[in-house]
Image (cartoon, rainbow, N blue to C red):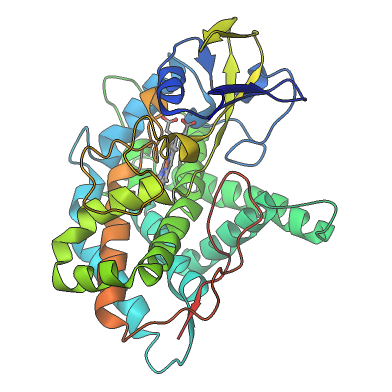
Length: 373
Ligand code: HEM
């Protein structure tokens, strides 16, 4: 409330207001390449910096355009458009497996396996390899929270090994796809002869890995935060049962009210920039508090109220500017289907613990477990 820009003791800057965050995300003087920072920091991939989320123009633009052409909306119909039946069938089969259980964990039993199954399907990972992908993504996600003070080193080692194994397996799959055009993302990228030329194998592997990681825990959290919020707002839950179309504005409101990505921590100033009368020196790390911006009272009326009828809901849940979330349309649709089906199929669900335990991550927000009975 006192200032939209705050300098921290370590020299980094925190930006917390809606307008300033949006301006920065659209400012060409900002870099997403973590090598431009004066001190090391985490990347979305937990160390590797080779995919387009950590690139700047013009390379970012070329790789993102090539991936988008095949992946799908909003720019092209792409693979995501044909997914509706697959998404519904996957959700229904996961819920069928819950039958007879007295208590379920929304995270482990449902939200975790769903998005990784979807990305494997889009990439064209053979079914027999899928269980290994689930394990790798699990180990990578656990290692992102690694805290040397409290966690066994094994947690970190498993994450490092999983990244290596995942990269190797994706590399082999890409190699096999050359000269064998197919209708999955790896085949399409390996055989792309479009206006931007060919994507190098290393870039295809980095892109696939990025999709698996950026498109996983975020959705797990959105679905879990969504169930939690509905259980805390029983009238909205009942409305969703009675008016299934409510799910579209409801998911937008969730992205504003309980966003899975709370902070973008990887921006660096290419040159000195001035934000709200504060000069931020070249090379400084800039942290953008998306969650705070989406609850800025200057931009949103009664920002702390969960209101699926909210109009003009231009939240920051997917960021803004050239790095605007690539998977937004898929994330929205996965979550809409998941919440609709969970609410339709679960009979009088009740939270076992409120609040549930949360992941100890400052960047990604969501419960580790969400037990309901
Ligand atoms: C970028 C959030 C799901 C792929 C981003 C960014 C945010 C975000 C805030 C901006 C990062 C930045 O500016 O540095 C979310 C949330 C999701 C979600 C909240 C789910 C609820 C997905 C899915 C995919 C995906 C399903 C793909 C399958 C990406 C990629 C980028 C990105 C590739 C980088 C885009 C670029 O650098 O041009 N996401 N994401 N995300 N997201 Fe998502």
